[in-house]
Amino acid sequence: MSKKIIIANLKMYGSSLFYEDLFTQVKSAHQQLATNDVEIVMCIPYPYLFLAEKIFANSGISWGSQNVAKDIEGPFTGEVSVTMLTDFSSQYAIIGHSERNTAYCESDLNIAEKFKRLKDHHVRPILCVGETLIEREAGMEKKVVQTQLETILSNGPEIFTDSVIAYEPIWAIGSDMAASPEQAQNMCSFIKDFIHTEVLTNRNDDQKKIPLKVVYGGSVNEKNTLQLLSLDEVDGALIGRCSLSADKFIQICNLTHQI
Image 1 (cartoon, rainbow, N blue to C red):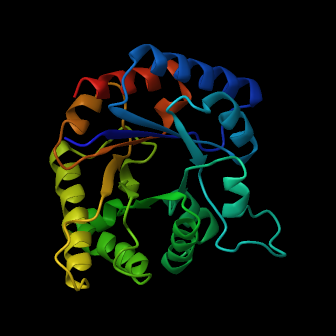
Image 2 (image 1 turned 90 degrees about the vertical axis):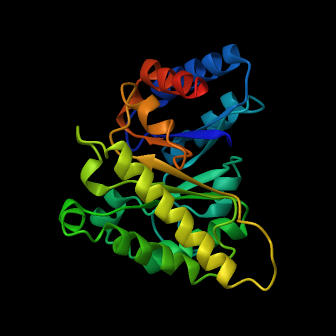
């Protein structure tokens, strides 16, 4: 079984003191386990990247942002480029989260441009994909997610190599209704099969499947972690609310170590 990955999405919460305390507790808990069978990634607001670099350096814990600009530089007020992220040794960046898509009208094409920009600068994208409740009830979830993935694939068949895809059904975000184990397993399996089929179809060699992680996000907590992450096709989790609590986030990481 490949190493599981646990990603914290801290969104727009906290303060400098909050993050210093959270990072210190997570680092201490990680060191006490003395094992590297789970990768921990903290995706945080831009102003605290310097703090993550300071506290997590050489700890085995990775960090990154929750967004990135599609451009390298220019007159784009309020934007942050990938080169600015790498100034703070950021290894990851979340893109395509439904909250941003809704609030800032980000399109699949815009997200694909960000994905390519991150890959070009060796920052691993965490691409969020998922369907609404109406789309799920209409049986359109696979079609919706496939369309989101196809836009990224326009950058080339190898674009997903060493990337992370978070299947995060929009109806499960910030609610008390996580996807069922069957739904999570089914969609994560579909995503892997679709990408690997597309990659192999466009290759001129007999290489094996590309390295890729597909994780589940949407109301993951300390109570359903084992059930969801024990699934063969689920490579980890994207944690929202529970990442704001050091105790709950550490508990989720510890439970993942047991799998």
